[in-house]
Each structure stands twice: as C-alpha cells, then as structure tokens.
Image (cartoon, rainbow, N blue to C red):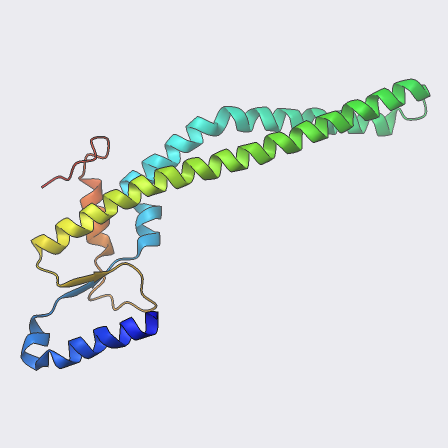
Length: 174
C-alpha cells in the first residue's frame, strides 16, 4: 500500500512537467531530532526528571537497604539463629518483591508521562511545520525519510521556530 502511494506521488510529480516541477518546493523534517533537541522537548525532559526524581531516590534507597541486608545475611549467617536467619531472609524477599513492583510501576508511569509530553511537543512541532510551510510556500513537507538532502532539510528551522514559541500557551508565535 505504501509503495503504491509512493509510486502515485512520483507519477504525479513526474507528470507535472518540468516547468511546474521547478516551482514545486519540498522540505523534510527529522522528527526524532526535533523531539530530542527542540526547546519544548528539553523542557519536557527536565519536567519529567523533576517529577520522578523523588520516586527514583526512594527506589535507590530501598535497593541500598536490600544490598545491606543481603550482605548482613552473608556475613552473619553462622552467628544468627535459624529463626533469625529465616526472618531476615523473609524480610529480604519482601524487600525484593516490593522493589521489583516499585521499579515496574516507575517504568510504566515514566513511559506514560514521556508519551504524554512527547505528544504535546509533536503537536507543537506540527504547528511550527505548518507555519513554516505556509510562510515559505512549501508544497510538501515530509516528516520521515530514509534519505534527506541537506538542501531540503528544514529541521533547524523547525527547532528555531519552536525556541521562539510560547510552549505554555500552546499558541503559535507569528
């Protein structure tokens, strides 16, 4: 299906004639780079780091406690009574189960928040691309391409446009 669409687009472009092809403006945007380097993307990443730093510290603290308990069990295994040893092993098992649960929930919540924030950045990027396309009279802008000639790559323009945009209000700066 995608191949058929590509063939149709190519046929339309070739059939448009040499005169019209000279006026046809194409641009390409590296979406991954926009989502990595643009001002709203960097702000979103910092916001997420701040939001999740407390939980990350809590998990690290619990990991340290589990390691200390494991070391204590290994060091004092001969001196502890059987009952104390079993209690410490149960405590360690409980800690490890709790730690695994916390890590899983942390990863799930982190991925969810990243997806939410990236969707906002992508919406802003699409608005920036639209504004650039209209202002500079582009006929076609592609967001994904296997190869992009630097001459038609407008990623830097999109990143600069986003840097000047007020990301909190969600409105374009024109």
